[in-house]
Length: 105
Image 1 (cartoon, rainbow, N blue to C red):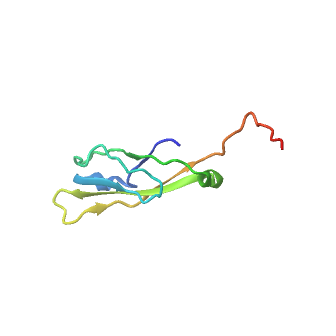
Image 2: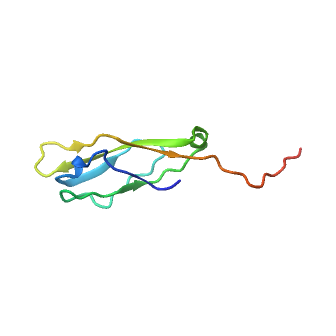
Image 3: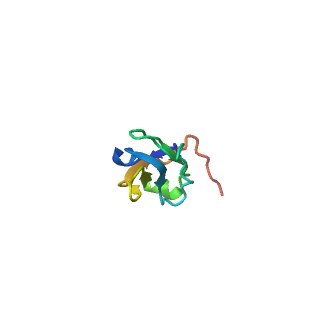
């Protein structure tokens, strides 16, 4: 499966952000989310990544849907901010068998 990146649905969470930046993603089977920096300057953004290995269930379902949210502590804010969830669906086509092997029994 290709690497997937998650980002907030709107850019407002990164405006004025300077510490505690991260991604909340409860998807089962997903590796730890890695972000290049835990701090950002106002108006800047970054891409955080994680790895997920598709399962037979994903192939049978035809895809994988995931939702993640960004969070952080803006400078001078009284409390942390959490973005709206951003959802992505990646299609997982069934593998194509080009040379089927006959089964005899």
